[in-house]
Amino acid sequence: MVKQPVSVNGVVRWRDVGLADEAKHQQKERKMVVLRHEIGDVLRDVRQRQGRTLREVSHNARVSLGYLSEVERGQKEASSELLGSICSALDVPLSLMLREVSDRLAIAEGVAVPDTVPQEFAARYGRDLNEELSDELRKGLMSSAY
Image (cartoon, rainbow, N blue to C red; front, side):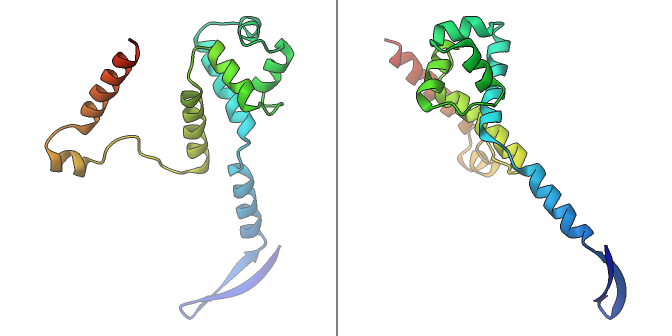
């Protein structure tokens, strides 16, 4: 580390050169997220919430027990077909699993993604649009079940 004079508004201060650069570099390293780790964490969380074993899910997904374990630990990069098979075995839509992964990535990257309609819109239109959208979604799911 080297001390270097820095002038701010005519006041000279001494700054350690190298520390800020190292801190920025470490901060960038901490923010780097490996997608296969997040996918594995979400798959494991879903499986454990359902109270199911690796053996049961691997059998239903027609994936070897060892490979599924490696996917959950983030050691293997799963193909879209394999992810689809695992999600089917877990009775979870692939899109929902990927949405959870996306939300986790956004949090890790410090990106705030709102999941709700802004209050300005709700106030402007005089009703809760979230409830209206939920009703429409529910009706759509009910009609697709027939």
